[in-house]
Image (cartoon, rainbow, N blue to C red; front, side):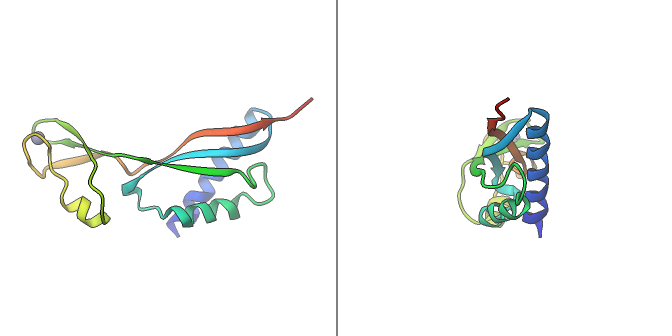
Length: 125
Ligand SMILES: [Zn+2]
């Protein structure tokens, strides 16, 4: 359960951030998820819902923004953004440098799952 363990660590991180800022209730979370992270968004959202039960994060609206895949050529160093849509294995097997067309490239972005933003209600004193 890749998604569930990711969901738990997201919720833990948000809880920690909320606590250190004296936040009573987290109302929204914005995540950036790379296509190559192989995370199923629906399962992730479901996991977050479960993991945030009875905490300050419960009921927070989770927004997922896709993070573009970026590669760097090992031969000429050119960085390109992959805009190709389709199945993951198709994308992975067709990664080529936009300049010299070699397949000797490394993925520099696209596997991440980042908490970009947390919207919260601050506790009234
Ligand atoms: Zn190249």
